[in-house]
Image (cartoon, rainbow, N blue to C red; front, side, top):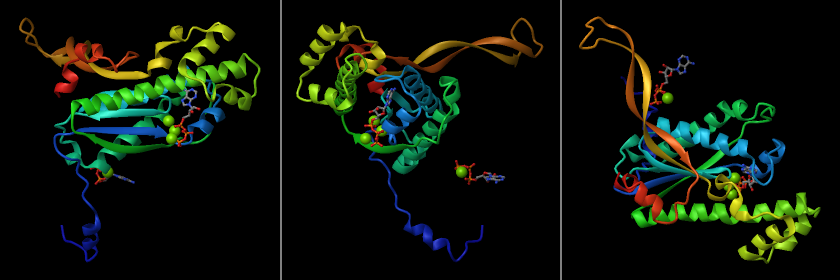
Length: 267
Ligand code: ATP
Ligand code: ATP
Ligand code: MG
Ligand code: MG
Ligand code: MG
Ligand code: MG
């Protein structure tokens, strides 16, 4: 194709390939979701519908970008880990990040009504994104542990805060002051002695967030084909093994999860 005299401006584009042979982590986070959650009547501290919608959007992303080996989500954030050897978009950071974040955002909106049948979407939500490279398996595991520990710390705080407000009749300010200088053990004790809540019995999805991993599942599909017995092509049910992203609400800080899923770090 003939080039125009304007073509030179392309040279101003900068290359941003990710370092080879490193884990590529892309984390996205809802923009101003404190307000978004209030405007859309999220149950506090944890709205189950909102968490399931986040997981649904993340599942779409995994199905679209199959070089993702594991994802982890909590609150309004999700992290996607691309295999070290991926050559998707020539490892260009901005391409990878924008594709994943925009696919997630549109999927979040696309599936909204299914998860919030009685709550119309008031305005389009947005998500930010960042790319982080981790050179070692330990760094990657520590990253995921960091996010899960964050989930636990915030959830314990929020569970305690909202118990004081919703059941204890405190104002937000009073509740905040009451727990500002407390340790985990104190919050557990407040929950148990004042509200009869055993934090350990809270749902795992709240305490641990969601891990999405690939699982091979049998899937029955219709396919027009012939068989050894019947040489005529016709639609038939065939069983195929397919990789499917499945959600788990489990500990990923300890070794057990990684021993049970050795393939993740081998990719
Ligand atoms: P920023 O744009 O800087 O990320 P933010 O308001 O989104 O600002 P975050 O630190 O990301 O701040 O926190 C997200 C907030 O969204 C939480 O503090 C909580 O109030 C709300 N939120 C997210 N998910 C849920 C949920 N499932 N249930 C209830 N509230 C939620
Ligand atoms: P990539 O993912 O690499 O961007 P692409 O298929 O989106 O692949 P583009 O070079 O971005 O390729 O081209 C966009 C294509 O989308 C056009 O070639 C055209 O076929 C189609 N398209 C976009 N907008 C319109 C439109 N308004 N009407 C008809 N076709 C359109
Ligand atoms: Mg933030
Ligand atoms: Mg946010
Ligand atoms: Mg957040
Ligand atoms: Mg295009």
